[in-house]
Structure formats: structure tokens, C-alpha cells
Length: 291
Image (cartoon, rainbow, N blue to C red; front, side):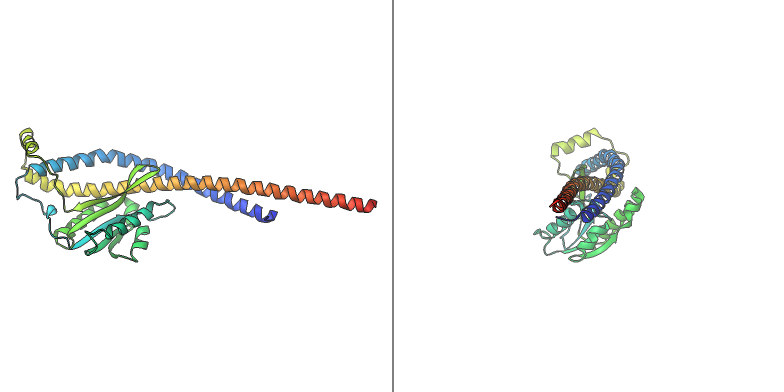
């Protein structure tokens, strides 16, 4: 059994760790509340914009396609991986790394030139050992605003239009709740138009009057929709990160509390045994003197 001094030292150490994890949990909970409100408010707008774009695309005449919908043979693929700059978030970053590695092993991408655009330090540190990093951006989370994200989206669109990459994918954690994050892989470029039945196409043409022309509307909407899609993915990941960290720190605090209680019990038992031994020694000494 460990001596009393060692047990006291371990109890102090575990108590300090428990205070740190508890404070980190409270900080993440406060940040999660804001991030959750942001992604919850943004989702309906992003989904409606995508729905509108798909409806317009479905009603367009054949041949009137956007440069962002250019379906060409896939030779080079750019995967945008969204992780975090800090750890202590459970399996948040590990799941992204596993998702990218699993994606690279799929038949559609095994023989392709696959490069990564990493957003977040944690995934970049691991994935750069096995993949070619096209670019890294760790600073975006310091200023997670639409204008900053729009610049990255414009760069991705430019790379696709110029033919440097034939497909652009997003891999990120989608926020469900504080305890659940779902790794998603979305196609960013080229845009895949929604298949619509002929009857639905006729209804679209009858229900709406477009001013200016549908082609001009789509030309303006597509870049905006792509920027919103990337911004939503980053917002999702940001909320997921704080949810994962809050949950991880909650579990760490519970484990530290349990360990501290066990150490205190061991300490009390050791102290009781030490006192008992001292009493026995005193009694033994007294009896020896009497004899």
C-alpha cells in the first residue's frame, strides 16, 4: 500500500486536474451555446438556398450549365478536411482523420491524385505524414466570419474552374447535439443538379415568373450558395468541437472525482492502519514494561 505522503500528493494532483477539466467544461459549454445558436439559425437559410438553386437548375434548358457544374473525368481530387486547432475534444479530430483515410481507400479515389486542403492544426499534423497537403489554414477559426470563409470558397472555385482539380470534397463533423457529432463527406464541386421529373419541371415553369432570366439568377446564386455551403460546414464543425470538448471534459471531471474519492478512501484506510499499528506498539511497550 502506498504511504500516506504519496497518497496525499496524488489526491492533490487529481483535485487540481479536476478543477482544470471542470473549468474547461464550463468554458466549452458557454462557447457551445453561441455556436449552436449560430448553426441552428443558419441551417434553414442554407437549405432553402440550396433548394431554390436546385429547383432553378432542374428547370433550365439542356446545355445551359454553369462552369461550376462541369462534369469531367476525375483525375485530381481536393479534399477539404475540417478539424480543430486544439485537442482535448474526445474523438472529434480522430474521426475526421479516420474519415479521410477511409475515403482515400475507396475504389473511386485509390488511383487518383488526391490532395488535402486542411483547415485546423490537429488533422494537418497527422495527415501530412500520409497525404500531400495542397494548403493549410489554421487561422480561420480565429475569425470565423462569412467574409473570411468566402475567400477560401472563391479559391476553391477558382482551382476547379481552372482545371487544377476535377472534384472538391468536404469532410467535417456535423453537429447533432452536444454528445453526438456525425462525420459527413459532401461534394462541393462540381455541383450535382437534382434530378427532377418532367411533370415537376412543368410545374416549376408555370408557378414562377423570373426576372431577370433564370440563367442570370443561377449565375449569381451558385457562387453564393457554395460560399454558404462551406460556411455552414465550418459552423457545424465549430459547434461540434465545443460539444465534443464539453462532453470529454465532463467525463474527465467525473473520472477525476471518482479517482479522488478512491484515493481518499485508500488514504483513510492507510491512516487508520497506521494509527492502529501505533496503538499496538504502545500497548506492546506498556506490557513489556509491566513484565
